Image (cartoon, rainbow, N blue to C red):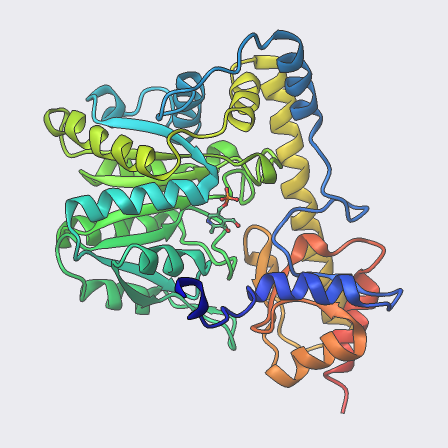
Length: 399
Ligand SMILES: Cc1ncc(COP(=O)(O)O)c(C=O)c1O
């Protein structure tokens, strides 16, 4: 029988954390696992700007006929603007196109399919550690994943020099996946000077950047966070950028995202576009409409856009506040526990520099659920649970 020979695939570790959290009967249980933003009440609410745009669509949308494989052209233009700005040189040179995709994940998939069309044996350099789907999609396409050192989980240290050293060994034409901001899972980002140095190295060695830009707005602001994407589009002749509306519009389940292709010249751009669209057609024909239509309505309407920007600021600032409060409380409750780095990091994720045993104690004895490798979602902290969490962590440091 065809369907008789498979062996079980283990559960996704992040889903395992969710299952354990749901199953726990401990009234104090805390979920620092799954990667979604939560507000001060621990809810993942729908943004007001999104609700208003949805209402507008209910009242005004006139058809649900098919989109094209490239998706909603208005969304594509606005999403591109949000990343690269209105008058980026590469855009003016007619060698940039943005295609709406089912989430950022769909963008990464289509981007890597395009890479495969260019070179079926391409090496894909992926940071160690990273979001596991980078490796999973690379392997699903039979491309060659390679790792570059990025972050020392146990010491809480960004390995910038090691990253440069490893990428110096890459070959011309190799693709490098970079987190545009809010590195998942370390929270450690490059400074502007480091982005510049890295861009020069990639240019010098003929490497092709693939920026995964899933958290625009969560580090320092929508505009500020676009530094990496704009710089790469300026300095490098060719690049891919996958972007997502899952986090910054809190539209996780609506699957709105994009892949942006930057070709070396306008001459080859049309042919390149045709290969992107071929990949779309063979995967899902065209992206779902709703999320991107909502994002396009918000980005195209100055009042709604201003309201949305304020909501993004609120989400970012709340996570920053929880990071600062966590460090302040740990400094008091367990001086020298060494969590100061958490305040400097960006986005929702950081690793706790704890041993495997200490992590299991927090999960098993205190019902604080997070990844077994130490990754926590700082957005899961609230004023109501932060004392419980920091007391539990501090207890690990008492002999
Ligand atoms: C680093 C990174 N890239 C891409 C994505 C994809 O996001 P989505 O497909 O939900 O838009 C995520 C989601 O968690 C992520 O963390």
